[in-house]
Length: 527
Image (cartoon, rainbow, N blue to C red):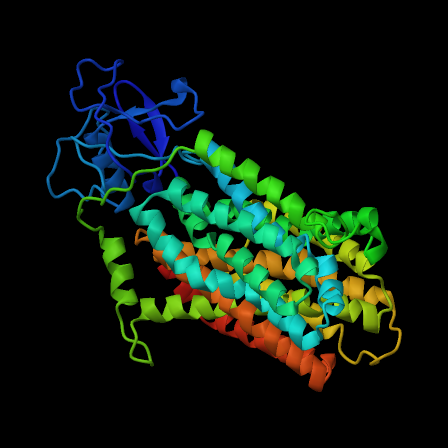
């Protein structure tokens, strides 16, 4: 919704979610007779001509309009009433971070997107070669589960810590420190063959996970510089970068595998910097990390956090908080139960994709007689389609709520998993089944469903500290990426892949049913 606030100097369009941030007490040069007029600070990269002037009485009129009160037909400003509900603004301090639909720090947003891309690239670019490398070092499917889960274990260790650091020390220091650890992790991964032990590969994966444990930090930054009503769209852009790193870069890993080969004949001795199909992705990551650290320290502008002043709450907000503070069946408040439920949804969506991350190449080789490079191309191509789906979520959100997108994404993913039921163990199966399943999971189900979970969680959190809570949200996802790969390895090894797919489908279908039943409550709490 947009509300027209008219002042003698300008007609402007604003929205409730614009009124957040700290006041810049600049007087309007265009309104010398209006002592209460204020100029909204322009965002980095924003045209100075787009700066907007308005005053406290205009904001007061807007809030009366929102609460259904008659503002009359007078064109002049209304007398100021101390009891007016002016959310985070007054005659003497007008606050605004955003225009109606823009990001307040586009340069910082782009750098954060690059960090997200590189963080998950460290997992995606090695997708075609991780299982062959594990086998080469003497590992089995169970060992592969531990290798994959080690990455998420590293994220679990630091995600809440990095989230709190972003509040106390700022974004720049936190992100620079994490990227430095990620650089170290890429160098350790590149030496796994020289060391020749699976446990060293697990250790390198853990360090990579620690270095990329800033999902909560980056999401908190995006939540801070974007308007609430369009937050799911911007979160979709951020997730598109994450998804491109995870599912798109296997294409690059497959290309590097083709160029440098995957056998020992291409290695010139045991030199620390010998290039082959296994370590070239790690060295490529090293270069990308160095470039990102440089950008952080030369172009990224840190944001200073200040506590917002206590303000009077609107009647609508008080009604929502009354619902949130009610007790649920488990003794928790409705708000706490919702936060916990969204964490569980994060586990369900991340866990299903983690299982395919663990066994996707194994299934392609054993069940469909594919080369690892061919499977990498298929997954990477489906990942690119998933990025396109994420970039279109702004249009999709006009027709569907977050809850509907979550339930729909989970059902599509479960359909893709069900298409792999009753595969013939140890025999060649038609390749279209693998392609069809990867398309439904990687191109539609996971990107749309999981991104809607992230956007809904951020909306429910609201104006509470985003960094810490989104850090715990990221830790829940990392926990699922640690548990599901290990579980998948054991189930597939002892019971077969069909049993594993049945378990995953049941988890997703039950989650979709719960979301559908509680859709109305989720919609209320996300306002």
